[in-house]
Length: 285
Image (cartoon, rainbow, N blue to C red; front, side, top):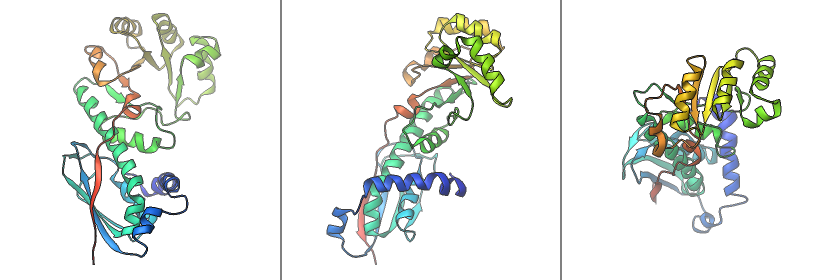
């Protein structure tokens, strides 16, 4: 759950921006059928099994439209939910419920889909000692929601943004003139509290990264045989991350390999949404 400071400073502005995208001047459909205030209630129904995530954000959408809206939750983020399950009831002005429905569901469906997919991969890594990481391959202006969903699903966050840490990728190495030069320049520039991670694509680069004193070496898009050779070269002198098109379908290639982390952009860029609906809207006294 987001704390109150994060909610007000970083989450609310993004939700308001999403609402403004959906309501530029008025909700013509709602105003056509509901010209006057009318108190009502609607059910939040799960339409498939999964891990629910984003209920606080879902509720916040309606609260920002009208602080008199009440959301009663019957589940919490991280719960396993099943098809047909009632997860919440939303009570308030029917016009508010109709105006906020799509934005609220967009957040909830997306975040729950990420949490569900992440959970399925995290379960495959149980007992291996390998930590599952996300990446910065997130939807613009939705990173805070998507990375939160990864954590709820049992994954871990890699750096949140470019300020969080040093990750020297192929183009950084090219700009610096080589692995040794890039690491040396990073050590001179970056504060001592930051680790230096280097992305490598072949065994020669692995050797250079080790000799340069990289703290973490990312093995990018390597086959299993090459990864095994790279691990022998590193020989405990740096932490090891594996990356590059990691999905549920090819995770087995890490079996038996001594690596510390596996990062997957698929957690955020390829998770299917979870099917969730608001149903049974009706007026109440």
